[in-house]
Structures are given as structure tokens and as C-alpha cells.
Length: 39
Image (cartoon, rainbow, N blue to C red; front, side, top):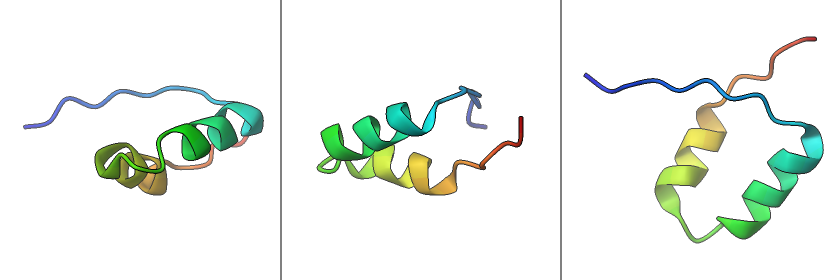
């Protein structure tokens, strides 16, 4: 069983992560699976 972590990112944070970790497939997969939460 995988542990789940929930984090809240601003759109700027999300873009920075996508840019900085574009070579890391596991982070990119996690970001793809991330749900967009409404405020």
C-alpha cells in the first residue's frame, strides 16, 4: 500500500515543479495524477 500525501500548490508552484522536475518521471506522474482542488 502506498502512502498518500496531499499538498496544496499555487499555480506558480505547480509550474515551477513541472519545469524543475521535467526529467523525473515519478514526480511528473504524480503531478499528472494530482487533482485540482477548488478553493
